Image 1 (cartoon, rainbow, N blue to C red):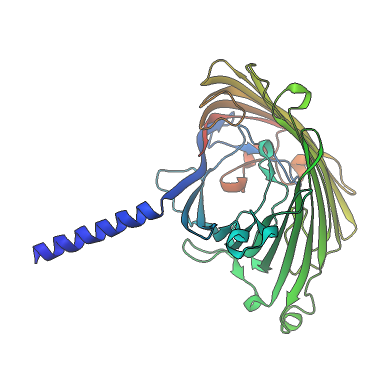
Image 2: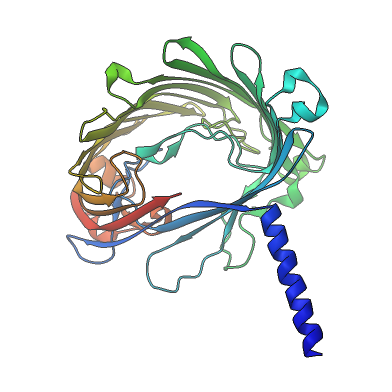
Length: 436
């Protein structure tokens, strides 16, 4: 019996080894974690301007967050490569060693790379067909942790990188259902919940043309997002006729490499959306609001060759008008770093924000972070990075009256009441950030 068991185990191990050899796993991910306190004591804190869509993140994140991605090339048939990928994400409150968390299933998709090869269609040479749930073409302004164009907040399918001569054309079909985030659910239960049996949904069509060479070193991306409501017959009865609207969005982004010979890149972004399309391009399911939003923003990263100085900068203006009520959001900031050697650097980040809701006083927040970090290289993108920082923030009465500025915990969802009667605060701590 022992011989049989040993033989079975050996065969199983050989099978696993053979499978692994045939389909190697590509493992990559992201995480951040830290610890600290404030001038008032207690847990580490962060600063957010109420009503703003963005925040300056250096020395201003109060959670442990991580995403783990596993991918594998499954095989190749007639020149077409099949690949699978899935990603889970986790977040905790940074309170203890054991912190229970419900994982979020962010990605689960398969793609067929160079679908034109196996089909014998020259027009699809190099194009990729995919289906499932995924991050999809979600460029961001990194120092704000703001992905400005991420329509794939729901599963779908798409055809990417079709060469049309002047650039690469991509299309994605994404289906979102109305979600219930209001219910309080324990760990292990589904979140968000389905509303009224999934009676209300919307289809988002994402069409974009990328890599259009418009000038030396510069490329343009343009796109449109169309949201079409799609409800069952019982939706009108279940919600008193409030079945939602259609919507559309337009985005243009121009990226210029090596501006003024300083290395890096500069990206200028312009967006406009209407009704049930969010500014980021995804569907706002079952929304009956009359909505208009637009944004102008810039992200500039400099990495001069042979220089110890690197930096990123951003500025933006965003306006939202919902049912006739306007809110304007303005920000400007910079993150310079001075690299003493290939590991040790000095860092800082300064940011200023304003939010002006119609009929209310302007809210302001200024934030300064300074510190030192130890990272794997002399780049603004060098990770992992171990940081020791101090963050000072100052805000006005209007910001304090809007619900408080100081907060802590996952997504900074817990207000810190100690600062309710204050107009400035100081936080300090250590943080590690890594990606691979």
